Length: 82
Figure (tube, rainbow, N blue to C red):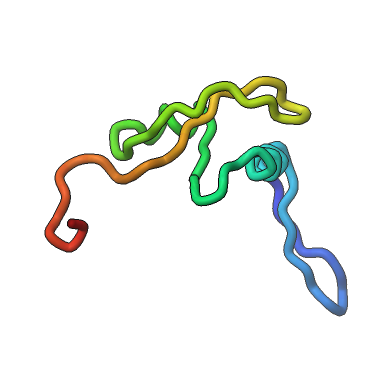
């Protein structure tokens, strides 16, 4: 990902790159009320969070991607989380 400031008089901050494009396309294939993550994110967080496998999704410019729904933080809950 690349970030930068655009303009001389009125500044705008923007982000570019494959990560941003993937996130945008994942959002286009999303389900209302669900947090959808890529396989890479799932593998990194699976010890700390519970997921439900959504399955394969066709993502423009990326092809078929396996995605997961984030359900909750895993492990014991505190009284505040009950």
